[in-house]
Image (tube, rainbow over all chains, first blue to last red; front, side, top):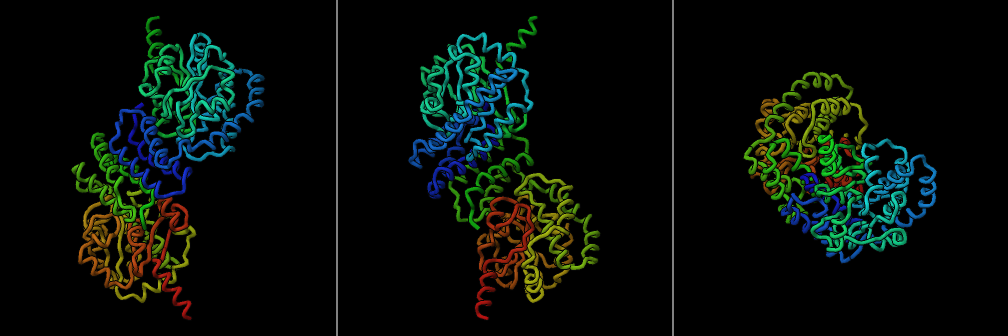
Length: 297
Length: 297
C-alpha cells in the first residue's frame, strides 16, 4: 500500500505523541519534528507508510539517545497478556469453534499498537479482547484461511506487537506449531515485538522464531535480512499480523492472510471497512488466483 | 499566541482538506504539500499560527493559480446570512437583552470559518445560530465589555469571515456605528472577509470600513498597512472576531475584547474551555490593568 496524503499529518501527530511519551524535553521534540518535516517534504509516496515510520523512529531514537523507548511499555503488555493467557486458553479449548476463537483473539491482540495511538491503557485492551469474542466480523475468508493453514507445509507467521504476540499463541497452537516459523522485528521500533519479547511471551519453546533483520514497523522485504527473505520465499503460506505488515506486504505477490484491526481512516477506506473493525483479509494475488480458478471451472 | 507543536499536523491536514476543495489535481496537492512541509520544517514557532497560515495559503494560491479559491463559498455564506438578517434583527430588537443577543449572534457567526474545517454546511451554521441564543456561556466579561463599548471614543472592530460579518451588524448597531471602524482583510485568504464581502454584507452603508492591507487570516500588525496601524494605535477599544485575530493579537498590549468560538484543541487548552465554546475574552493587558486598579483601591 502506498502512503496516502492523509498519512502525512498523521505521521506528524504520531511523532509529537510519541515524543511526549518518551521525553519531556521540548527542545528535542522540536529538533525531531523539524527533521521529520524535512524528511516528509522529500518522501517517496510510492513507499508504504512503515518505510516512513522506520525513518521517523530512527530519528527519534537517534535524537533522544534512547535505543528502545518503549521497553517498559512492552514489558508491561507482555506481562499483562501472560496473565490473561491461562484463562483465555481454557476459553479457546472449551469454545464451540476453537479455531475461530483463536483467530478472534489473535486479531483482538492487535489493539496493542502504539504506532497509531501513543498511549493505551490495559482496560482498553481488556475490553477489546472481551468484545472480540462475540463482535460480528466478516468471516468470509475463515474457511479458506483454515483450509490453507491445514494444507500448507511451511507457514511464515509474521508477528506485530509485544503483548499481542502472546495472543498469537492460541492460533499457533490451533494450526500446529511444527509447520510455523514465527517472525519478530530485527531491532526495537515502537512497541513492536523483538526476540526479547518472543522469549518473554513464551514463544521460543513453542515455535521456531526468527527475526526480520530490520527495524521497520512492518515488513519491507528489500531491507529485511537474507535469512528472512529465504524463509519468506520458501513458505507456501504467510500469516501477517497488524496494520504495518499489511501496509508493507499488501502489494506482494504471495499467498498472504492478513489479520488485523483497522486502526485509522486511511486503512478503513483502503479496506472498505469501519475504523476498529477486525479484519481477516486475503492478499490480492490469492483473490486473483481464486477468481481465475472459478473462471476455469 | 505562539504556534504549538500540535498546530503543525493540523496545518498539514488543513492544507490537504483545502486543496481537495479547491482542485482535484493530485499533482498540485503533492507539490503544495511538499512546499508546506519544507516551510514547516524551518518555521519560527514564536510566530502565531496565522503567520504560518498566511504563507501556506500564498503557496496554495500560487500553485493552483487561483487568486480567490473560496470566492464562491464566500458569496454563498454572505447570501445565506443576509437571508437570515431580517428575522434575526427582529429577534434582537424584541429580546430581553438586545446587547447580549447581538454579542451571542456575533460569536455564533464565527462558526463560518473554513480555516479549521474545510467544508461546512449551511444546516450546521443554522444550528449554531439557534443554539447560540440560549446556550450557557461565560458572560463574566459582558458588563465590562458593554461599558467599555459605551465609553470608548474610537472602536476598531476587526472582522473575520464572510457571512459572519453580516452577523456583526447587530452588535455594530447596538454599540452605535458612528464610533466604529470595521476592518476586513487586505486580500483574499481562505473565506476571510474582504472589502468585496463588506459590500455584499451591507456594511459599507452602516459603518466606516477599512482593510488590514495584509493577506494573513488574522491580524499580524507588522505586515499590516500603515493606514491600518494608525487606526489600531488611535483606537481606545478593539473588538477582534475569531480565532485568527485572537491568535495573532492575544499578546498585544492593547485594550482588546475577543469574540470567538474556540474551534480547536490548542485554543480550547490555551483558553481553558471546551471545543465549540462561545468566548468573550478580555486581552491580558486589560486583566492586568483591572487587577492593578483593584489593588490600588
